[in-house]
Image (cartoon, rainbow, N blue to C red; front, side, top):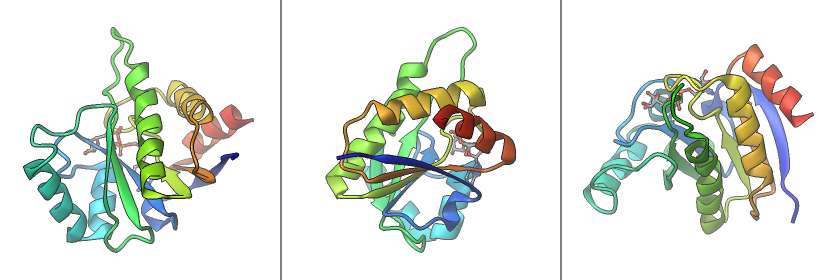
Length: 170
Ligand code: AR6
């Protein structure tokens, strides 16, 4: 089974895919950036399910590097897969956690039976991960993961992020 990696530029909440990945935080209760946009456009059903997850399996929150799925509410998708990227650190190498976000999201996608998955550039906004390095980790992690997903689509918000990912995909 081969997975095709594709790129598009724009707002991930406008994408149509089986699963849309959210760059969440450990609280799973919303935030800015992609997270804010997903909850705004997806509507309250997503937050309701996040709250239920916090009350049951994830009462301490979701650790960085892990992933969990909810409904996608009003988004053009069946599921949102919430993953928590690491905050960039200039003194500590947290690359393995960022790679884990992509691997774990694909593992959850496989469990769900999702065949198309849209990813944002996890950790490159509020969490300040440098785009070049984040793109390298994103592409290497997805290429290195065995999955039934047919298409992994990176959705980049601005020109620069798009160009960086395009160079990396070659
Ligand atoms: N569609 C696609 N990409 C987007 C969108 C969008 N609608 N909005 C922003 N980006 P970020 P993080 C890009 O900050 O760094 C939240 O508060 C953005 O330009 O969303 O993992 C959470 O609750 C950047 O390149 O995620 C957490 O607290 C990339 O998406 C924290 O931010 C990721 O930026 C997570 O920070």
